[in-house]
View (spheres, one colour):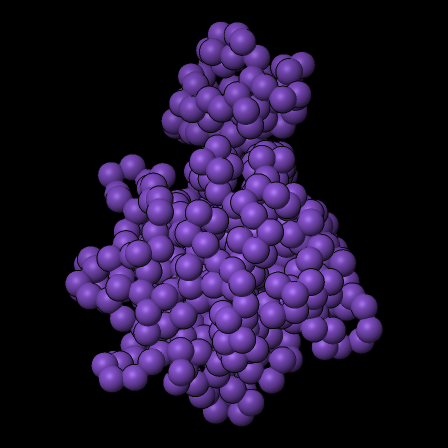
Amino acid sequence: MKKLFATGIATVLSVSLFLSSVGKVSAEESKLTTYTINFKGSSVPGNVKDLIEKAGGSVVKENSELAYVKASSKDPLFLDRVRKLDSVESAGRSLKIIQEKVVDAELVNVKDHSIYDQYQWDIKQVTQNGKSFTLPKGKGSKDVVVGVIDTGVDLNHPDIKANIVDAKSFVAGEDANDNNGHGTHVAGSIAANGMALGVGPELGIGALKVFPKDGEASTDTIAEALKYAADKDYDVVNMSLGSYMYLQDPERDTNDIRAEINLFKKAISYATKKGVTVVGSAGNAGADIHNPAKLTKFLYGEDANGATHRDPASNLLIRVSAGNKDKKLAYYSNYGVGKIDVMAPGGDLGPNYNPDTGQGRDNSYLCMSTVPIFDAQKNIIGHGYGYKAGTSMAAPKVAGLAGVIIAKHGKNKLKPAQVKSIIEQSAEDIYKKGKDEQSGSGLINVVDALNH
C-alpha cells in the first residue's frame, strides 16, 4: 500500500488526517470494543438500552437528535446481532482519526512591526489589501460566531482572546487550550485582531477542542461538537480536518467505515438545518478526488480496487481547495470536478520548491498566523506567530468570509445555502469560465462578497 500522501507532502504545514488501523475482533480476543450505531429515522428507539443489552453490550453515549449511540461490548457476536435489528441503519467499530506529524517553519520573533503588514499576503489577497475592512460590517461582528472544531485555541493569545465568546473541550481531562498549534493558527486566520489580522477581525470565535494532546479524536466526538455549535446558535463552523475512507481496505470492515461516514453526514445535516454554514478543507494529497476508484489507486497502488471517499463529506459542506501567492493551485491541494466549491489561499513553499527533492524552499510563501509557544511537554508558555500551509489554512478564510457576510445581512437572516451562493457568485473566476476542478467557482473575494 502506498503511503497516504506522496513524497514531499509531509513538508506541507497542514494537518492531514487518516484513520488508524482497526483490526477485526476475533472470538478468541473478546476485548472491550466500542461501536458506532446509527438508527433509522430521526431519533433513537425508546428501548435502545434494552436492545443494546440484549445484543450483549452497553450504551456508552446516546444522542437522540443525531439518532446514534456509542456502545461497548466484549461479546464478539455483538455487532452481528446489532446489525440484524430492524431499527439499525448502520453499525461498526468506532474508528480513530490521527494527526500526521508535520514540519513547522520557525516561529517569527516580531516586536516592532505588524504581522499583517509584513507577512500576511494571504489575508491581503482575499480582502483586497484590507479594503473589505473599511466596508460596513466588513470586519464582522462578535455576535456572529465561527466555531473552530480543531485542536483547541490558545485562549490567552493577545490577538484572539477578545474575540473568543465560547470555549468547550470535548476531550476528557483537558480544557479548550491548544496543545498543538493548528487550531490557534486556524482561529487567527478567521478573526485575529492585533498584530495579525483575520478575514473578520471582529467576529466571535467558538473554540471547540476535539483532538486531545496525543492527537487522536473519534468521529462521534467531532459530531457532538457540530451538534453543540448548532444548539448554541453558532453561525459558521470550520473543520480543517479529514480522512480518506478506503471502503475495501482489507484492514478494516467496510461496514465500520460506512457507520462513521453516515454519522458525519447526519451531524453536518443537523448543523445546516439549524442555520450553521459548515466549511471544510479539501485535503492535501495532491489528488484528483473526482473519481473514487482512481483515487484508491493513486493513494493505495494500482492493485487496489474499490472506492475511497473523503470524510467528513457532504454536499452541504463548502469544500475549499488551496491556492498560493500567485493564485495557482498549491502543489499539495486536492482537486476534482464537482468536488471543490471555492479556493482560498493556503500557501506553499515558493516557485522554486521541488516537492520531490525538498529543495528550494521559501517560507515566506507560507501563511502566517497566530500560534502558541510551547514547552517540551506541549504546555503553553507564550504566544507568537508562525508559518503553516495547507487546505487546513485555506478553509478558515472561507469560514471568516461566511462570518462577515452574515454580519452584514444580520444574524440568522440568511440560510447556509444563501451564504454559500454569495461566496460562490462573488468569487474571482481565475481559471476557465464557470466552475472548474481546481478552484470551483473561483478564488474568494471578500470585497465583492460584501458588495454582492
